[in-house]
Amino acid sequence: MTRTVYVNGDYLPEEDAKVSIFDRGFLMADGVYEVTSVLGGKLIDFDGHAVRLERSLSELDMVNPTNKEELLEIHRELVSRNGIDEGLVYLQITRGAPGDRDFVFPDPETTAPTIVLFTQNKPGLADSPAAKKGMKVISIEDIRWGRRDIKTVQLLYPSMGKMMAKKAGADDAWMIEDGFVTEGTSNNAYIVKDNRIITRALSNDILHGITRAAVLRFAREAQMEVEERSFTIEEARAADEAFITSASSFVMPVVEIDGTVIGDGVPGKVAPRLREIYLDESRKVAI
Ligand code: PMP
Image (cartoon, rainbow, N blue to C red):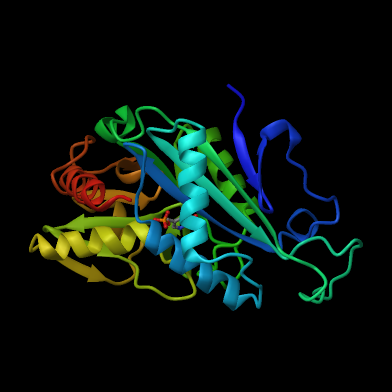
């Protein structure tokens, strides 16, 4: 079955979907994105993603070509047309195609943003074997720009980080700045020590994860202790547990950091419990 995608108001077979070579997303990574997971054919945390999208656009003085209601409808239509039970919806909005290359932003009156959405079918996303085994991470220097709170499509360094991890026989990389862990290449990073969940506080240094917000809320509701502060990679290597969160991996235990085994080298108690709570609670309110 050919996938149906959405481009600037039209639902099209993927092979017919086209974007200009002058699109600023293509030429300058001048675009923002969101990834929303789908479980049981329903959208997880849709509202959070829609709110963050608005913020990313406004921080870049970009016009929003849509609104929350319309976005929800497009998401649902794509999930339905592509028969997605478990998977993801990817959304990207760029500053559009002014018909030439120029560093100066085009006039939004004459250059409309480009909006593209597509689905990714991922059967077994929730019941992932990786979640039972845990993942291995390495640490790398964080050399990204200073506005990581904006969810831009400038993903070259995170992508290189993932390749460095693969080359080292690991699954992902945690990035370090001034001695402290910022986040994973595509996820927020956490450690657990003496039953306290520790994760970096929100700032421009990290993406404000939608899954992070939900997981911390559920943790507090379950009377778990949460500390929002920076931690070093040495502290992480000496932690009882470590894990990551993201819309596509939910909560995923980390069992090895830079070759050091964490805890018993298998997922501990906290991360699997948080994963279960997150999945249960999110499914209840999925739309
Ligand atoms: N940090 C970075 C750098 C990311 O790319 C992502 C996922 N896109 C996250 C954190 C997690 O955010 P979310 O929970 O909203 O997927």
